[in-house]
Length: 318
Image (cartoon, rainbow, N blue to C red):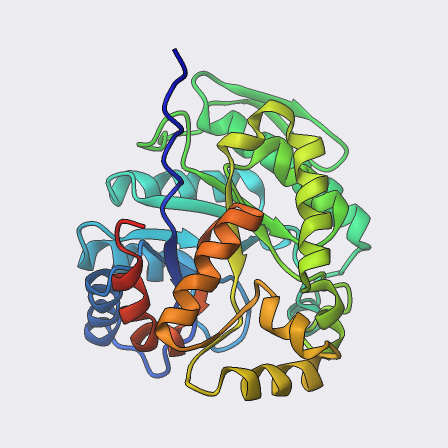
């Protein structure tokens, strides 16, 4: 007897709320509750040295203000903290949020952070090597018993890693990127993998356009599948959607995006990193991307919160 095909993973949304202007405890709590009420699954905060809120206290405050909303780091920069300290902070966030924390970590990419803080910015290869060691340390500290680790960059001698996170075996691990090495690292360790344009230049500008196409997305997914092996089917694929415009002028918006990012209009319409069109067109794009790429998690900026509300409602149950 053939088994029934499994239902597709639902499409969920997260909102990046790193810089909410002149935030107060009241306004930040109200924002978190609004995000939850509109149907977003998670609120995330990035980790930079500009005007944004610091991620750990901001995420804890958001968790305290809500009851269902997941909180997440998108993403902690590995070079800013020792992994033993980061593991403790992450476990505490997970414990005090009653298991609602998604743990994102990356190798670091924003050159301005490094330059202004006087932190040496090593080559991408060395930063990725250090990230892989840090992930091994953090997962070891999340596990039962003492952790022992000896690598090129970190050494841990019998540290128990307390407190332990509430989620077992650990909070969902998120790693994203655009290059082959970091995506294959993510495929080996992460539960959620974010597809991004490659940010070799350390900034987001028109140079990222060529790495945001459907063809580039296919290439990245092939790297992930090769490195993940049998666990590929269990992975949640996320995409950071930089532009969300609900409009009746879909083609005109695509032409503008194409001109700004060096793409054809067709490439601009199909990039997974933008959403433009009517509510119905955006819903169809999201369903197509789930079928085509397996993308079921979409991250957007704060300015898209209100416009995406009807899209989230229209996708309910699909």
